[in-house]
Length: 420
Image (cartoon, rainbow, N blue to C red; front, side, top):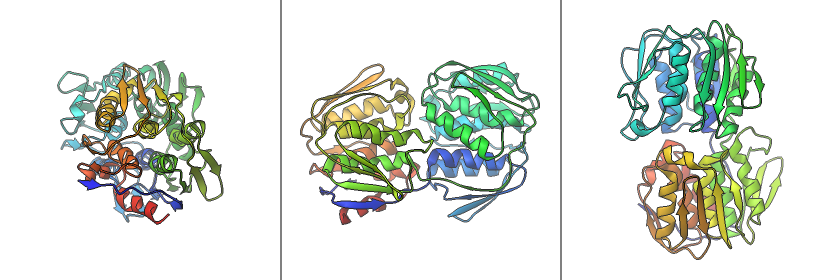
């Protein structure tokens, strides 16, 4: 357990690691490429290292130099993997790899932690079945562990339900160009978290894959395409930047997160627009994006495309005047924890009125009090509630090492706020 020391931030700059979402996708694309790739500035976290270890087990030759990762691609076909592939509680690893595993040979078993066994993947398995791939939930409950047979991925037309996760669509998009017939993908529901689909398409195009799309409803990808080997750099993580922008919002300070642009395809960069609506000033400069706090007021905002930022926004809302309504976020119940329930419970400990409904979260701002914050082994709960401790004495974060899932040096970077 650590206690957050109250501190009013002045002006400071921080650097956050590479994007978690881009790192997962870039590592997988490199493994599918036609030769040697160098991935620079990858995020080195529990989740991304699980993806890296998985592609090694599935046959990719990898040299990990920490600041860069060298990967010799398998030209669209993974090798047999007789041992189960363990993915802990990395939902992104599970969902993205479940699709591309079908490009391999033999049968792949993807496993994880007990929490992973409650995270839904049925919609992706159904889509794979439509394509003639005998993918199945080992326990028959639509959740991991999953069994994915290789050698059956011919391609074709498929409809995918993305009301729970856009990662199901991303999984199909990543595998589509390596199938003989390609894919015509229709999205029947959703997708939630649309910017993550844009990220996947961006990665495909960077690797030389041609994608035709009609918004978020239809995607056509020719088969027999090749992921192009080369050098690829991962941009800073907008999700991780949010905690530092939120710290500025709460304290009235000014924080610049270096290397990020509002033009990024990462949807979470849109959090700065929400903070602007709440009364902050936002500056987009050559060094990065700066948020300066102001008198915070409540907002009503649709966060379907920024689900990972909901706990961040909820904690900032606890310091705002009025009731903030965060809408279209029912899919947060299936994250590392039930993030709606977790966020509500911890805000209530601090004396803040918070109500989780089916698809929205209501937070009425006030004067948060100190509390020991349960993190539920959820990195985003720990990092979000750290912000509250900058203004509220007595905020203690239980099991702070859970941040290693996505931001291993978070607490070191956090300390840089105390210098500004």
